[in-house]
Length: 113
Length: 113
Image 1 (tube, rainbow over the protein chains, first blue to last red):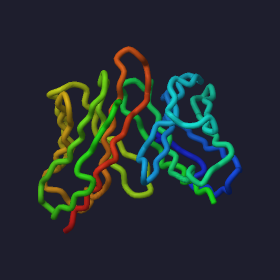
Image 2: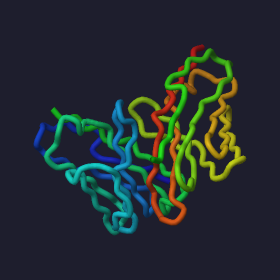
Image 3: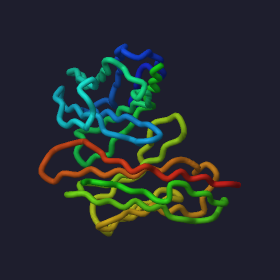
């Protein structure tokens, strides 16, 4: 079974630009969660999507948004990039997200200059 | 406030020297506790899920245990390939469906040959 895939793997942007990251979950998994990982804050929950609906949201500004498609693939968007948005963005999938183990992708390394 | 604390932050062991990593949590309504391993530049790799106090799970040289306030990851006779950051995460919420995980800061383990 193929694992979680994320594209692109690396991205360099400048302040003020916007970016879209993509995540393809494991086949059959309907829950997709996004996390931001930085050396200072560790892994922080951004949001979770289940059956195309945002089910939960972390404490991030509205510049961070996401969506999920009918095939469970998900995208997250960050608008008006700031230097502090530089991080590893991780996507995780699980069958339904509730008390199931979540399987992570390799992440997208975003650098904002 | 829901919180997950891991200790120590860093641990250096000689090959074969057994030890334990700690994950203490203060959350309301634990639904599950998860252990992950993360290698540099990669996404977290799932290790164990524990659901209730007294539960134990083993995999090769690793054994995870759970009490009402903390979890331990015991590493028996570690090898250099066990070197990684070990992350603990909890999922909360008895009445709501959510895939949100709250992560600890991790313990970085280095095993020297």
